[in-house]
Amino acid sequence: MPRMQRAAVLTDIDAEFPDSPMVLTLGGTAREMLTVAGRKPNHLVNLDAMGQTVSIGLGIAVGLRGRPHGEKTVVVEGDGSLIMGMSVMSTIGLLGPQNLVVLVLDNGVYLATGGQPTASSSLDMCALAMACSWSGARSVSTRDELLESLHWAAAEPGPTLLHVIVSTEQIATDYFLEDPVILARDFRGWLQNSEAGVGVSTP
Amino acid sequence: MRAEAERLAAVLDDRSRAVIDGVEAIDPDFVIHLASSTLKQVLHHFIDGDGGRGRVVFAMPREEEGVVVAAGLEIAGRRPVLIFQDNGIGNLLTALLTVPAAYHIPLFGIVCRRGGLGEYNSMIHTISERSEALLDAANVRWFQLDARIPIELWAPEIHRAWTFSRTTHRPVLVLVNLMGG
Image (tube, rainbow over all chains, first blue to last red; front, side, top):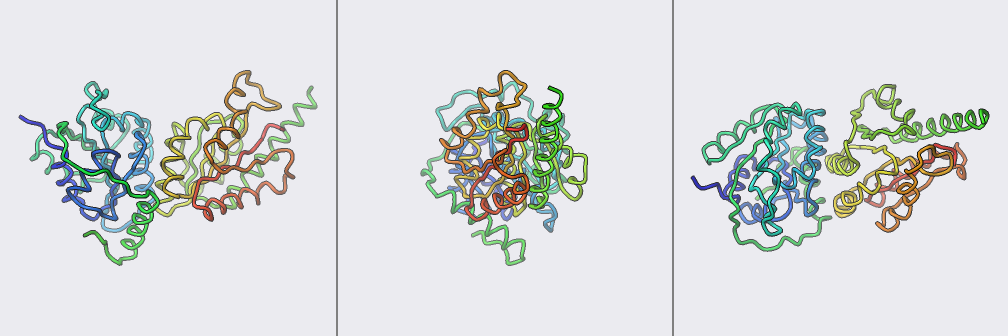
């Protein structure tokens, strides 16, 4: 069975969490999300560097504890970047944010830099998450499994990890050259407006 | 010799208290720390003592992770403070420059000095005494509290430095010498 295409997975992630605070890892993941979902103020792009995206999301999730409606903070990470900052897995287990969902799109390579292999083929990410006292973890490789597990991650108290096996296929995208100051300003503005009940401003 | 040890212990007590008072004046809701024997009194206050009440206090496994988690907390409107040792400055530079500095997110850290007069570790100076140079090269704003600064000014200076991080939308570190230098 062919592996899922990352851009298609990102489309499903955006459909499941259209108005949730979301932190996107750098490179093709962020660019493909911009291509399939457009520029959204609830999406914070980590432009650089690897190993940070989950930690940013952890800080946001813990900082947003108590927000209404069971809102989840969603992190979309890659396997290489997760491995670079893997100590955060234990910090997440320690802090136990129920509003955190981490989606790891695992293509087994550092795709943006030419496809050098990561260590993910020998890593059981779900076992790691559970060993770090996360609430739940699943690995999916088909679209049916993905859709069902996205619902599960949206509903279940976290922290939850969804390990999504994807192909190395990429769609054509432009570089994303936005000033990070504007990204942070837009995201913080969206957080404040959505908290105040002004309403989310996603297109 | 004994008198000198007692003098240094008293210095450590007084300066640790001043750092605690300065951080308390900030009234952070999150205190993120990394192990340090020099900071033992300060960390004890927040981990086991009164300073932990009503706050989330936790250890960062590495400085760069703490920096980025704190940046996320700041984005979410919280008031984190980082507390760690200067031999970890090298670890955090990429994170500091690519997240809070790049996104203009205020961030505040207390960094205790090592490797100077009174040091008991024969190696730590190889990184610690380059702290100022590393931070300058990275264009990270820092202030220093040591024997040249009257102890009664330490706590207000810490609070002013925290305010300065908000005013200038960037990371600001206060280097504190608790070892007598």
